[in-house]
Length: 275
Ligand SMILES: *[C@@H]1O[C@H](CO)[C@@H](O)[C@H](O)[C@H]1NC(C)=O
Ligand SMILES: *[C@@H]1O[C@H](CO)[C@@H](O)[C@H](O)[C@H]1NC(C)=O
Ligand SMILES: *[C@@H]1O[C@H](CO)[C@@H](O)[C@H](O)[C@H]1NC(C)=O
Image 1 (cartoon, rainbow, N blue to C red):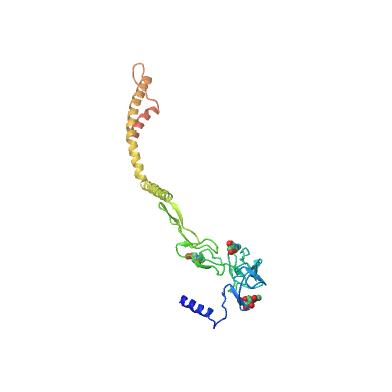
Image 2 (cartoon, rainbow, N blue to C red):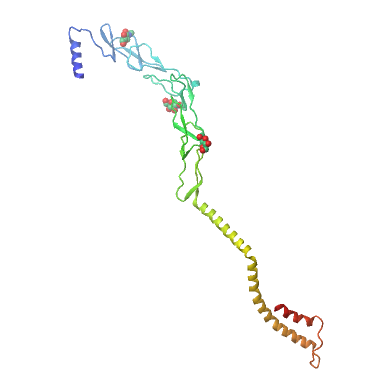
């Protein structure tokens, strides 16, 4: 197809019938029946020779985006800082540079006469579609299992922390807070304390219920050795006392003296107590 077109073109161009010249429409223009050269993009033309034109570069904040024979360059649009446009964009002399909103701002309208700050998503909401220089942020509620704890124009809802092995969920996550994991040891310690407390309580309760039985049991156990001890101890004691008594109270003829008051009653008392 292209070849056919070229053939037709060649026929037309060189046929004596169609004598009119055809210039390269991109880099040439026709003047007085001749093909003249145009200036390159980024430059403008100083009126001069058709075949060897004088071209000069465009000035600051000017541009020419195509081959041309213009005597002045186009001006880049002025981007007002007070309208929240990005001032640091360096303009190119070969390209039209539209004003761009600075980071965190978007065009107020399709024509972009000024820029507005991006919407911020509240805690419990996250960015669903990130904002651009031309479109605002889109917020969405944090789905179950995700959270956002801050007001932000860039943060998405983050998933709750997965408790690693050996850890367990101590505080569940919400739409505004992360799940809190705790080391398993803490839990075992807590369980151990509870179990020990319950056991101690049970033991106290049992002791309370059976306190009379236990008392009796203890008393019985104590009485037997006490009896034995007392007998063991009192027998020689009694004998010793008897001897003493005998020695003290025997007359020269070895006849016992009359018992003193109190002492006589002491010994039988001991016997009745023990039985
Ligand atoms: C510039 O080029 C256009 C065609 O692209 C032509 O019509 C016009 O006359 C030219 N101007 C000058 C000053 O040569
Ligand atoms: C301005 O635009 C340039 C690139 O064009 C970018 O690198 C820079 O971060 C922007 N600055 C602001 C404040 O938006
Ligand atoms: C977060 O969850 C609570 C309770 O489920 C709900 O009342 C609240 O509206 C949620 N927050 C947002 C920003 O949706």
